[in-house]
Image (cartoon, rainbow, N blue to C red; front, side):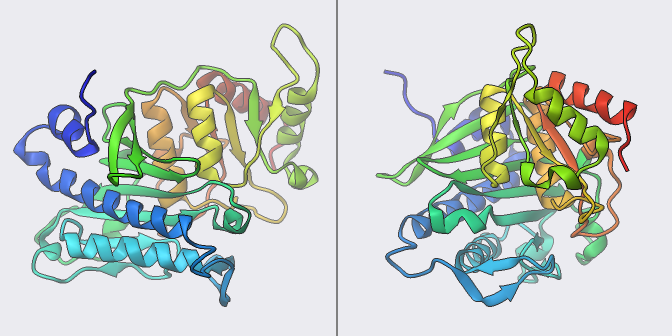
Amino acid sequence: MMKKLTAYQYLLKDKLSGDKNRELIALLKDIKLAARLVSKELRNAGLNKILGEYKKLTNIHGEKVTKLDIVANNLFINSLENGGNCAGVVSEELEKIVIFNNEVSKNSKYLVLMDPLDGSSNIDVNVPVGTIFSIFKKSSIKKSTNIKDFIQKGNRQVAAGYIMYGSSTIYVLTVGKGVDAFTLDPVVQEFYLSHKNIKIPKSGRSYSVNQGNFYEFPIALQEYIRWCEQEDAKSGRPYSLRYVGSMVADIHRSILKGGLFIYSKSKRAASGKLRLMYECNPMAFIVEQAGGLAIDGDKRILDIAPKSIHQKSPIFIGSSEMVKLISKFIKSKQFD
């Protein structure tokens, strides 16, 4: 039997060999540690009475905050600060950036942007949720970290990943050399390589969209959805609508089986709802590295010049042929 490789062993041996990558490997290890702790908290949430909303609190986006949002946010920030391999953090749960000023952290060249618990509104009904993260380099380690260091185009990411907490806990990662996944062994609490060099199918027969917003969507998207619903043996339609309401779960399915994830602008959300810096960018990096595409309806997600850390963006992401087709619908129809 072939020996199982841990995430650390695999990165050290294959994707991030060499002394220059030791700090990045250590940072990814800090993220992995926090993920294990979050996974444990999620499994025991009902028993420990940490389900439900947190004192009717809302985040900067006006969304309800759950108790586990706070737990996950604190676990990740504590792990990143204690690890000393990260100079600062942007979190969906915090309005302002967090800068680590201890002697080790302030000299780090890396920054982390994250959604600590994507899909947290699903927790109470035991639907898969996840963590999404993006890693950038600072422009200069000699200068103090400030908000400008975080506002970079997605094409400058050095790593991105997500952890999905479902029937198993899976850690999906890219460092710009393809996409790999590691599954948590709950007995020994270690992530082992389970999916090597993942490739997203060029097309699929399912799409993910909140169909309840159909009449809020631009005409072009309405036309595409109607097209997906039509029967056509040649193209395999009608396509299946698969929408979990957790970006991590929906995109994970598309990466493995082929498909398209859609979160468009609408009448009530002119800029979409998902956050560019710590949801769209990392997912776009992962999907592109797996052979897929990600656009905002006009241009490549990773080429968007951000203006703020909590900026929102529409996103159409998944199998390359499906993204290309919906792009044609958008360009040929009304998308206002």
